[in-house]
Structures are given as structure tokens and as C-alpha cells.
Image 1 (cartoon, helix red, strand yellow):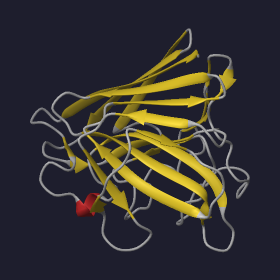
Image 2 (image 1 turned 60 degrees about the horizontal axis):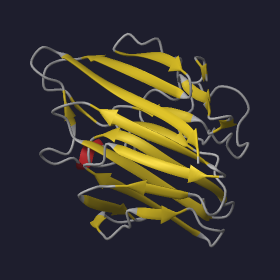
Image 3 (image 1 turned 90 degrees about the vertical axis):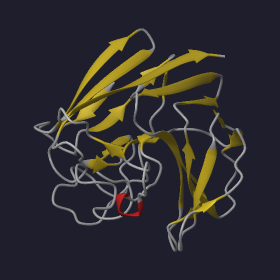
Length: 237
């Protein structure tokens, strides 16, 4: 795997089971996004912290070099498995939402499988709603749609595409764990749409920290330290 430390610590490559899993992006920008005020899709995995949507959009890390003075991570790479250990030091009671905003290189027909207790669907405008969502969903052909959702109580998600399966598992005992989905089948942005598939392990139950009710955000415990682990593994089908 590879990480661009000059571009918010963005993951730029994840090669498991003989293939690249990360989408390179639609070519909207060349080089780091340092100092930008509006988020631009560059592909790969952006670390969204302390919120996903809202202010700042996609969090406060993607547009600056990340030195890990508050939030640090350690990568461990083994055969077809990557483990990422995160450590956050903050004042007790600090509330946040974090997501590994992974944009995947998948073809139409790829499937996303997950078990969850509730789906919070996010329209382009207006508040989120509790809506049905299948446990196995398909990344379909270009149809002009785009939808975001948060699958609540969902620590594990699997993606099957072109003869291989990628599984993501997030562990953080005592904290709310979800999986966010962004299924853009040529419906975003208006005027110049492209395709993208986001499968995003997250701490929290909402995209926007400002909308988080009781239990909707991760909370730093009394000792001021919080750790969590993200494991990604892949295998041929």
C-alpha cells in the first residue's frame, strides 16, 4: 500500500489479492490539496475527522499535511491483510465522527454485503431519514443517481468485484460503529457527474457531527485516550 503524507495522509494504493482496490479519482486536481476550502475528490482513502459532512466538509485533515500530533495511526501489512491501529489523545468527553472514506475501484455489478440494525439515508438536500436498505446491494450501471447512507451497528462490510472479495472490519469497544456508503452512479455533481463508490468504516452514526444526538458520536473516555483498529483483507473468490 501507499500513503501521500503531503495530501492529508491520503491512502493512494491498496493492493490485496493481486489487484488494486482504490479508485484514482476523476482527475479533478493534480497534486496536494493544501489550503483548499472546498473538498475535491482525489480518490483513494481520505481520513475524515472530526466530521464527515458539515464543517469542515470531509473533516479537517485532507487539506493539510498530517503530522499525527493528536490522531496517529500505525499500518501493519501482511499477506493480503492490512491492519491500521489508530490512537487519539484529546480532552475527556471530546465528541467526534471519524471515517475511512474509501473510494473503491469497482465495476458495475459489484456487490456490497453488510449486516446492520438501521439505515440512515441522506438525500442531496433535507434531513436524513430512516429507510430500508438491502443487506446485499449492487453498484449498478450509470443511471443518474447518487445516494449516501449510514448503516448503523455495522462493524464489517464485504465488497465483491471481478473475482475477488475485500472485507473491512472496524473494532472500537464501547463506541458507535457504522459503515457509510456513497453510491454515485453518475448522479453527482450536477453538471459534470462521474461515477464513484464509497465504502467507509466509521465511528459514529451520522455524517455531520453537528447533527449528532446522544449516542451518535464517538466520545473520548475519562483518561483522554481512545484507540481503534481497522482491518482490511482480500481473497480471490
